[in-house]
Amino acid sequence: AMRSYKAAWNMFRKVHNAGTPNFHKKTYEEKYQTSGAYTSKKKPVNMWTGSIRFVDNKHINIPKLGIIRVSGSYRKLLDNKDDIRIGTTTISKNAFGIYYVSMQLGSDTPFVKELPKTNSQIGIDLNTDNFLTTSEGNVIANPRFYRTIKGRLAKAQRKLSRRYVRAKKEGRSLRDSKNYQKQRIVVSKLMNKVRNQRNKFLDEMSITLIKNHDLVVAENLRSRNMLKNHALAMSISDVGWRTFLQKLEYKAELYGKTFITVNPKNTTQTCSECGHVMGTKDTDKLTLRDRSWACPSCNTYHIRDVNAAKNILSKGLKQLA
Image (cartoon, rainbow, N blue to C red; front, side, top):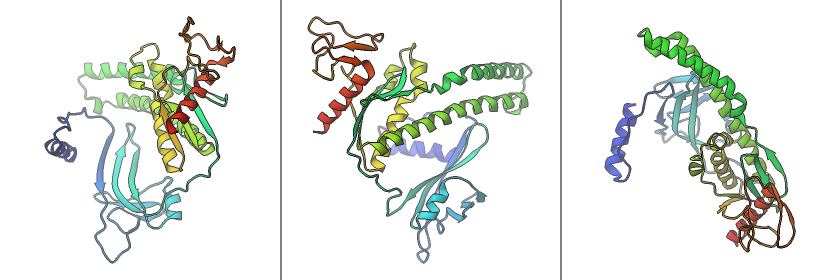
């Protein structure tokens, strides 16, 4: 905490537009960072020789902590590469007491290989009804992870609130109230379950799109502005659009594919066949209830979201041209 406090004020003094540091409320989540160093010129620079280093496949040595046992996907790195350098390492504890070690790694060779080209291009339309619709006509259902657990979470939160009130009435500290702490962990685990389910789903969807297509085009959504609509705020937060677009962006760069976003203006209102825009030439604009429609200019029948995905792909191709 002291190190973060000093670093924030140093940044404020050096960078005039960094902003005044804000004090944050102490939570049950804790973390600290330490930097890896390689001082010996005689030893090779890898994951086994620095101040932060692996002792074997199950143990890691961290300054001030010593040797600790770890588990995770790091074994794939240890088996395949021998020139990895460990940089800044973050040790964190989540709200219900599980510890994690996160490392910044560097190497002279790529961590993954570029995927083979597929000569395939796709546009995707994101919406709350279905998670996404592709220009090929495929529809991915919205899993609605938060809504499935909403009732259980609300019940657990009400119980937590009652224990909070009871502890305050009796003048006990919340950190010393065992019943409150037990229920807090129950609530934290429920919320963490939703977070993990959503992240797994978004990871699987993003890597599938990147593997199977050379170009993926999506609409540039302003989630922050859309959250101001109270009728849709919970659905938008539950679906995780912004996180999904971020995953597509870094995975495309990682695997040698192309991902771009385009302005979504009129992608829903425009006919993908003839280019007629609804709301012009004495025609009415489509509303949210209009899930399918026929173009008054060329009589082409459209499924609303598939048509939008086709227009998104067309905009992306023009942007790249």
